[in-house]
Length: 257
Image (tube, rainbow, N blue to C red; front, side):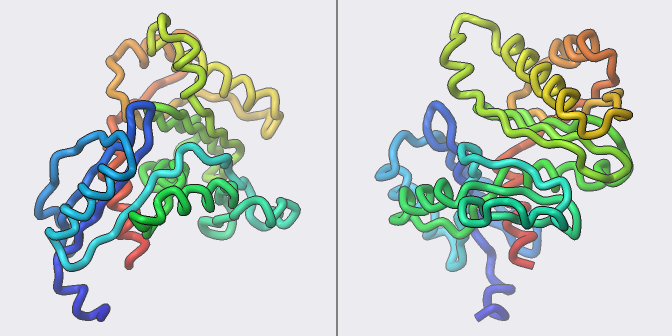
């Protein structure tokens, strides 16, 4: 079966939750090359989502569905060798190499699988996995603060000499709903400032001063974001746009290798 699948195009369907519903994305790919990208859409309920997915699945004999788990309780493991003290009954630990990794609530994962049991999820990915993959080269060589900005979350990781010192997952849903009248840029800048303060207060490395900030931006902020952060932190800012649905597809392909 595996040999047969290697000759067939594969349909990758990704689901990303947001305040507006579930963002549905699909790509038909063969040999790591995109054949077709279907139009993205936001779906309001699971019944409509299931119908649309079943229609998409007619495009290929082989399909995979991936979900971005941005709402679960989660965080980073700075040293997997010392993670045995973590409550393994409550959290799933995923190590990436011998050192860094992430943890995620088992209860939240169970609830997600239960909620989507009629659809069937093949992969559940943490946004941290996207951040690690997107900045794979820089993480090994470039010290600084790495940010992933989503519509309802912010991920932050601080690296020094290729080692993960700190990571935080900030849920933005409640913050955004509480400040509907405030500019979105202001809300995200304030949240990033709070994250940096948490890092310094943690004393993870008292010799580490953030001089460079790398931003993977899924919201397409304009240059005002970079200007504001430069003023606040006196740091160099490097911002890149990120296509979260497509990055999920790439993670699926990595898992299938």
